[in-house]
Image 1 (cartoon, rainbow, N blue to C red):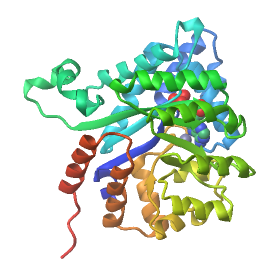
Image 2: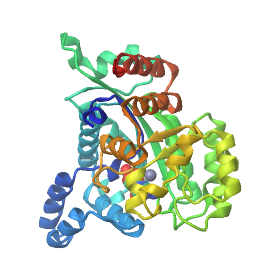
Image 3: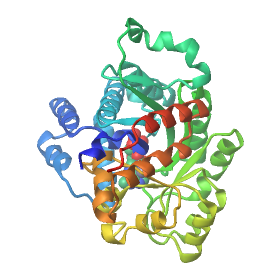
Length: 362
Ligand SMILES: CNc1ncnc2c1ncn2[C@@H]1O[C@H](COP(=O)(O)O)[C@@H](O)[C@H]1O
Ligand SMILES: [Zn+2]
């Protein structure tokens, strides 16, 4: 299934710190080990572990955050993640990350995001387009000066989503929404609510999310990732976000409501199976949503944490649900309609996909 790699693809659910290369994490752990911040021998086998429960995933995120917590490293991991995505023919990615404050490192939520944006600017294996189209003309020479020498390079469109972590307070969530509004001209297109689904309450985030909605910022919510959150799932569905991540533990009535709403669902097959939120690929709700033509997007969630890639997720969908090259191409192309970027980007994406349409066998 070489075509899974070759096809143009769109990634709409990828967490920056969950997508770091293992080799980079090991290198960072060595440095922090020498400084006595971590014990390298302990950390090494945690990094290399393959199967992680949901609880272990969140312990792993805490470890990753210890390793990536300075501006320079945030810039580096952003660059590497975008290079890895571009290398497997992802043509548009919405990369999400939680802006972090860290007084010891002189880091504010804003300076964290500036480090991420520096990472986008520092990619040199591919042409990164992250400035919104209406501003792109005047800014392109500034950001892409190296492209003016006549060499044409592949392009990846990158947009950013700012994540609110479920551990945060209402005030901290509001800071993130404010920051997202301030950074719209630098490619921030929306808000994500994520973090350990076993902690935090929807009520804490309602006011900042309503504010974001009021300001026209699209929102995607991690919804129904764990059992026994019936009321929260209901409140999230009633909120009418622009997209939903996972959508696993829904009651029958909520499932109906989701389908009627036509809210696109970001599907992360490997993530759901590794964390045992779905018992096996044969029981995955992808099949039901696909059969009922509900808007869905195949995504990775955390390529690093789950040792996966978007091509691998396409391959998995092809083999588990019997989809062929044309069907997966069409599924990928449909995602254009669910991106948070503007119409100009959507038009470019349509052209990219049209020119890559697989040839039907004669
Ligand atoms: C496995 N399923 C998941 N469910 C919920 N939240 C998740 C997640 N995977 C990742 N994150 C969220 O993304 C953060 C890491 O990236 P950033 O530091 O933001 O770049 C995690 O700390 C968590 O808040
Ligand atoms: Zn996620």
